[in-house]
Image (tube, rainbow, N blue to C red):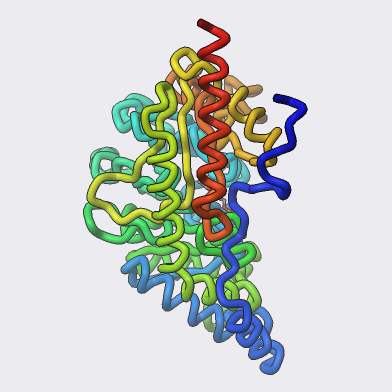
Length: 387
Ligand SMILES: *Cc1c(COP(=O)(O)O)cnc(C)c1O
């Protein structure tokens, strides 16, 4: 088997960028060059801002250079200061934890529930005298338990900030993601379902938080060019906004390709014991940005890394999102006094099982049939050997 040629001659990637209408993008970029207006809240950034606010159903949108700086700014604008503890799931991008650590806060990691999101019961147990905020993450675009986290936050007088990097275009209880907590942060990184090369946005209904975030993004300067706060350069460029707008134009096309792909993976993997495909929240709109499976090695006949290796031999570059959990990466795992890393059994089990598979507009029925075939062979091969 190892001698057979790979099923795919060119690699299939997770997070291959969705490009959208190239000529529309180039027209927009040409406009920015004609105007000689490339940065500093230009017309494309403002158009992008209005469209993202409409998508999120929020009064404010503050476009930023990326979601990592967006989380830093949102957290600072919400009053988080050095030394504050923030309860946050470990099962997320390192970006979430690093953004908080970089502004001097201490992430206190909670475990996951059955949907790979923060377990509100565990969050409640982690809230202590130094806790100053809760950060929830909509992992793989599936909304976390916002109502229960918001109730906890309210009971303890804490802001709830939501890392919505993966949940652009999704809903929670029928309302668009973006309008929950004190602020939510989107990512428009190239690998996300909508992209602006690099980019992000803070969305909120809080007028004062939005005003602080706007100034913080712009080196502390308000719209009147007065210095009002300590800031950073978190600005989005016109080139990024040109791509972001083009991506927004293509949103429905991308979502329907993703939705079709999810359906195809579901039927392609049906009946394969020990391999579970993550499903979106029932009744909600999802962007299906990630195809995530959990491989239970004890049942499937092959463990996750064996499946990963089998896919790689056929040029399918699946990814272990997220692996390891944030509590097991530096600096958090090395600083028990500062970061109090607790054993998080469900997170650790999940990190050993998850695999993200290629989707998006670059992947279609033939690719998915091939990928599901490789996974099946890896599992049944293992079952036969075990028997
Ligand atoms: C991608 C991602 C980020 C970081 O976004 P950038 O725009 O790359 O900074 C943060 N959190 C989560 C959950 C992500 O998936």
